[in-house]
Image 1 (cartoon, rainbow, N blue to C red):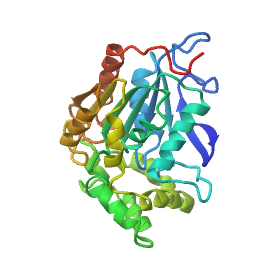
Image 2: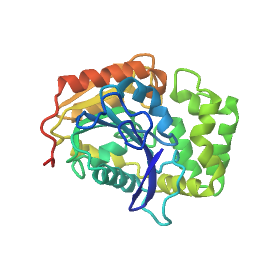
Image 3: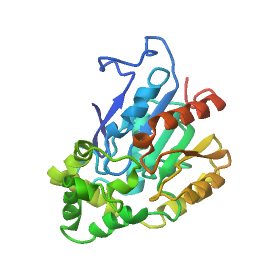
Length: 299
């Protein structure tokens, strides 16, 4: 993992074309310019949730995966940092700026953070992909999101709820993490994702700050700005998603002037885990159908 210091703290990320990596993408030779994809994990997930997709795409694209401070991170943020949804979105925009990324295809799964850049800090985005994520009135989403939100309001309840992930049976229940994926999630992967939350009080403090700042109208208010997004957008939904109902995805696509709705078969919310090949193919088709203009802000 690479790391970059931002205004609210240091975040980790992966980058297939980083000179610090021992095996950059095959097309990352000096002097080449490739399309840049930024894949953003959701609540409680680290970069590994995207790695099957990264493996599919790295031969043809530069792929970065930033781990935002919403539970899957391992480096706690500065005390008092703004970890509301809008504060985390500002960190994502700062990440793009600090790495001087232009013409980005921004892909968000599970969380809805990327929507909050539209009309605010979206000048570096060439294409937007929203994949089975929080949107409109589905926030907090499903039983899982509502349980986390409620637990954050009760002293000690969030830690107690998170401890249930130590049990393969409890973590695999449909009302828990198991309901987000069609395929059974290996428990060692669950422990990797939620290990920091289980062992580090500072990481739990960050997630608690994010959850406690939740406003139920966050993405309804953001919807007005989506109507003015003047670039290609793909709303990509797990065909069997239960936590993020497909009808929400269809409504979301209708708001985007250049938006299109598509479903990925054999997938629920965690499309990168359930069907990374189907997701990667959809991304390739979308990018090929919408060649990027000259990157905004590029010299």
